[in-house]
Length: 115
Image (cartoon, rainbow, N blue to C red; front, side, top):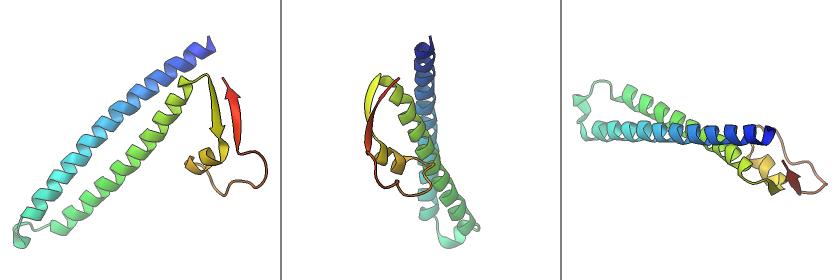
């Protein structure tokens, strides 16, 4: 039963992260359009140009952050697709958003895991 529950959660998570990615793509494209419109306007035509540029930069930064978080969650969800996997622990450690330091020296760098 636990395997079925995990598979269900993985499918739901993958679906949700896909929808989040679609929403973030629309936000990014909309910010890009606003940036293009801003660049086409004359300097005096847009009284708050610097503020808009700063806000558009913040939007772009946060969308990139959201895409990164969503991608990592999606990768985790899809890790449930394979019942047996060989994992490069050093690579996983480096790719992990929670790694706080260097990979410990010594020991094996890959391992086989079963669910």
